[in-house]
Image 1 (spheres, one colour):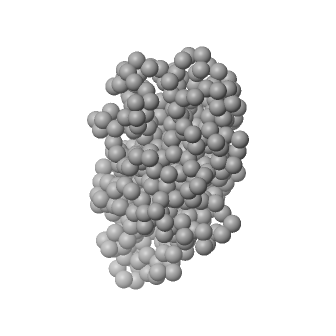
Image 2: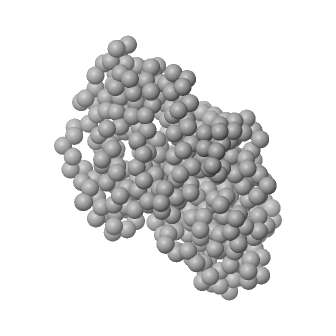
Length: 420
């Protein structure tokens, strides 16, 4: 049975306030299905001229820098898609809501937009997605691509992540340190992680990797509002850990690595994809991050010279000349391009209803968006990939990340069952 964890009492309260507990009288999008000109069946969020998609992002909270670039990349995708004729003879229109990583705002925004859109090309915050997952599966049935990779989201035919889940990503990250002989059997490694779906799912992966390699995990649970990692560094240093895994946000990563460097504590740090932003390179922690910090993710970085990232970087800078480049640009573009590919398949099947889109996604078995990894969406119970790319901060590279290990699966991740 899939786990749906709300994470905090605030989420439960928000569900009551927003009516997201399933009190809607809506019978489902299939009841509204109509056949448009050309014989294509349509429903919620689709007219003869437009396809409406929602974007639930964070531009003012803990993931503000990434949320902005994810959203702008998706707006660029929509602009280019429409300039090329749209999809199924229709323009793609994005409606954006900034929830600031606040549970009540996130769930209120979902409730507001859900009846108006076909689905969501972005939803930041795995606890918020998990809070409405039962409603999505039971009655709404709109495809949601979250900017979240918790394994608790697996199993839903409508909530589909693009990339390895946090647990698998963490196994791959620890596998990299083992490959590089930075840690070995018998060592203790620290794990600083957010409370809730993201951090705890990553911890599950860390524990699996530790068991397979004979390591011991020293845990440090924190809240998203905790920005000073001095106490965590002191505790891990005293515990004698040989490396540290970070499953938190960019601010926490900068503090952790910066405090360690200031105190002369030299160990490798490795973070999940959400634990880095190139803006960190301009902080006092910048030099330390470039020395011995690594990031695992399911896409090539925007600074890669491969055709996909290079082309996107050029187009993004042309569209947003004042904006910086970061991994959120790639994440946003990749999610939007997956959604676009599914819409094209649904159009070919003459069914642009929510159910038609869901069926089309199951037929997407080998999708290569041009960013280093091929994704398989045929099984809702499985992540779209088990591969991770390992990167290292570098201020000389656009986007501030360079690849140190191409896409691969650590031995401990190959047979690991995600904990969704």
